[in-house]
Length: 568
Ligand code: PPS
Image (tube, rainbow, N blue to C red; front, side):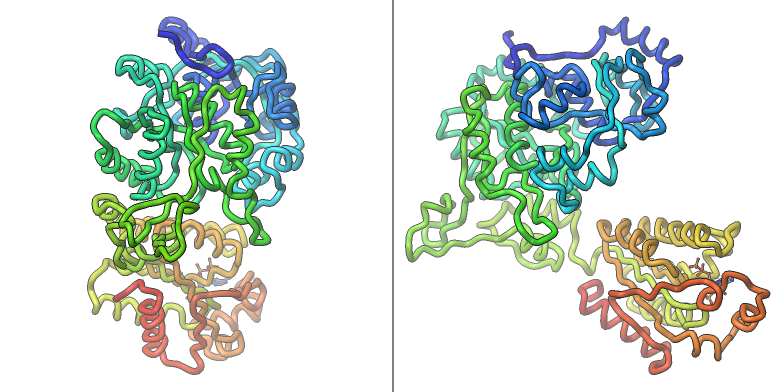
C-alpha cells in the first residue's frame, strides 16, 4: 500500500532481524546511554516512523532551524525539537562518528546512534522561541531547565528492539500497522482526535460531529506516553476510552494509543500533533480550544490564546498535508437537552458546564456527577481509581523539636484512628524508624535527609495503597519536607503538623536528658542547640503543647482531618 507520510516516505528505522541480532552482540563493546522516560517516548516514534521524516535525534543544524523557523534544515515543516539530551559528564567522552548503544531502564538495547553532532544548546533561547516563554511554570520549559541534560547529541538511529509495553497491547499500533488497517477497512478519510484527559459526553459529541462534518471515520488517539504532570493516569483513562468507543455507531470509530511525550507547547504542538497523525494515515485532525495548553504562567496569565493553535495550523494549511477540523468548546444546553458549540448559544438558553477542576472536586468529595456531563461507566471507572477523600490513603506528617511532644500526640492520634477502625494505620515514629529503617544513620544534614526520605517513601507506599501513615520525625529541613509532600500528594492526602513547642519549653522539660548533654557538647549536632530547625511556614496545622494536652491535640487533628474530608 502507499503509505501517507510527512516529507514523502514513511520511515522505519528498525534493522532486519539478523542485523538486529548482530547489533545486539556488537553493542556490548559500545558506550551506553540509559534513555530517560521522555527519550524512550521520542525514540519509539522516531523508530516506527511516527516522526517521519526524522531519521534520528536532530543534528545541530536541524535543531537551530526548527527552533528559529519551525523547519528542518532542508526546509520541511517541523515545529518541535527532538533532541537527545545528556549530562555534561557523559558528553565529554562522546566524539563525532562514535556509535552509542541507547538502552531502556532495564538495560535492553533499543537503538544505536551514530553521533553526527554534539553541542551545548542555549536552553532559554529554545524555550522562548519554541514555547514562547522562559517561565518555569510551563512544563516543557521546566523540563528543559530542571530535568534535561546540558548537552545534546544528534545522529541517525538504527533500531534494534522496540520499547516494550506490557499494557493495552491490542490498542497499540505503529503508523504502518494503522495505515494497513485503514487500507483494509477502506477508511480513506480519517479524522483524528488527540486527548490527554478522560473523555466525557462533550468530547464524544464534538468528535462525532467533526467526523460527520467531513464525512470521515474517526480515530480516537489519546496520548499515553507523557502528558501534563498531575494528569489522570493513562491506565484509568484508557479504560474510560474503551467505554467511550462503544458510544459511537458501529464501524465508524476506532481507538489506538499514542506513546507520545507531550510538551504542552500549544500552537507549535498542534502542528506537530497534526504531522504525527498524518504519519499514522489520518487525513483530518481536530483542533479545539486551547490545544495542548500548559495552563497559566507564574503571573496567572495564559501562555497562549485559546485559538492560537488553530491560527498557526491555518498558517501552514497548504503544506501540512492534513486538514484541520477546528472546533469550539461544546456546552450543554438545558432547554434542548443536547450539546452545542458555545458560539451557537442563543439568548435566554441555559448553558451547563462542569470544568475540569470542578469535576475533580466532585470526584474528590464523592459528589454527584450528572449523566448529562458524562457516561456512568466513565464516572465509575474514575471513581474506582480516584475514590472520595475519605477513602483515599493519607499521611499525617509531624515535625518539631526533640521533646516537643510529637510522639505522644502521634500515639494519641493513632489510638483515636484505630478506634474509628476503617483504614489500616502505621506509625513511623522517629525513634522506631531510627531503630529499624535508618539504624546506620547519624545526624548530619545528609543523614537526616536520607532518614526523612526513607520515611517519606514508606509513607508514600502506605498512602498509595489506601492506608494511613503517621510520621513523627524532627524533619528539620524545609526542602526535605517539601520533597516528601511532593512525593505523597499525587497518591493521596498529605497533612503536615508542626508541633510548635518552643525550644525553651522542650529544654526545660528535657525528658530524655538530651538537651543537657547537648549543652555540654556531649551530643553533637543537636537540633535547636547546635543544629538548625527550619520552622514550617504553611503547615496544615500548628500545635503548641503548652496550651493543650495530648488528648486535645489529637482531637484537634481529628477535626482538621474531618474538615479536609479525609475522615468521615
Ligand atoms: S531527623 O532529624 O528527623 O532525622 O531526626 P529523628 O529521626 O526524628 O531523630 C530524632 C531523635 O533522635 C534523638 N537524637 C537527636 N535528635 C536531634 N539531634 C541529635 N543530634 C540527636 N541525637 C539523638 C532524639 O531522641 C530524637 O527523638 P525525639 O523523639 O524527637 O526526641
